Length: 359
Image (cartoon, rainbow, N blue to C red; front, side):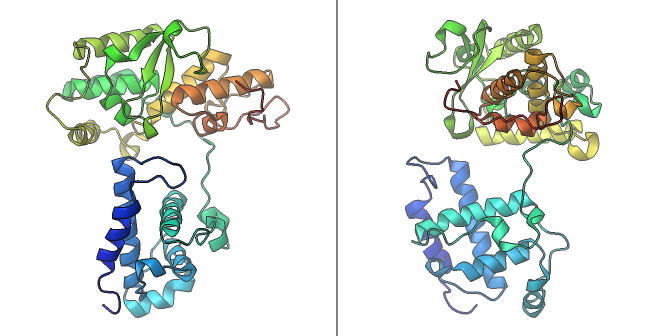
């Protein structure tokens, strides 16, 4: 297939040298991130060859990036080349999230080959920025109750299939855990009183106890989620009964992490919990948690739930920050993706930017 027939070996050599490192920080990345990068880069170079380009991996250049984006966005500018090479055009563009992810991988790769700055911002490659722009503001309620799903009935249906997975869903609902965090959850090691939370960790002072969440978090980032309701305590009591020993977790015994995650997904399919069938996904339970926590703090429905935030902007800003922290983030703007964009009574956006005096 033209020149550089040994491109796979050369690409693998570059990956072997660099793929364990974070793209911008002096730390390593998780196995899943490294694997996703590797698969994406092999897929990208395979696509380039199908389109008639045969670069040595170290000779990747800006023209190749342009052609890749044209293909991913179903741009007519790539149509003739696709026809000549027998490559079907996409019926619809890939999602903005996918395109941004691929460009992010390429941006890191460009640094590895000594070409930092080669990969531009996604908007630089298109005439219609909406093709590559993601919205981080929830425009609709993605929670289960917001989509007319009876949460208790749905989790009970899952329990009839697999009690472990039902317990994991319950923790996602009541503590905003991600799927992987719930699968790896060790309840005995997680519960801490407020006085045991590190002094330098920003937490609210009106909660008595917290859940320490670190296993399975993104980047191993530690967070503390408040234990504030009887429903949360019941979910924890159930988890403690299912994992009776100090080091026990609520994943199915004898399974690897991958097997446990696959089991979770298989049970979701069997129970019919999907966007196609119910209009929700398991991740919607994090949205449920975020909206419930926001209401607990402010006694107002979140904008995504139809709320009009007629309250002190400082209170709203503090609530967005608290929700973000209990979800495992540090920036209050992240809460936009779960709660919607905050506005005050005059319908003007409330600034969520933290100033130098923010906690």
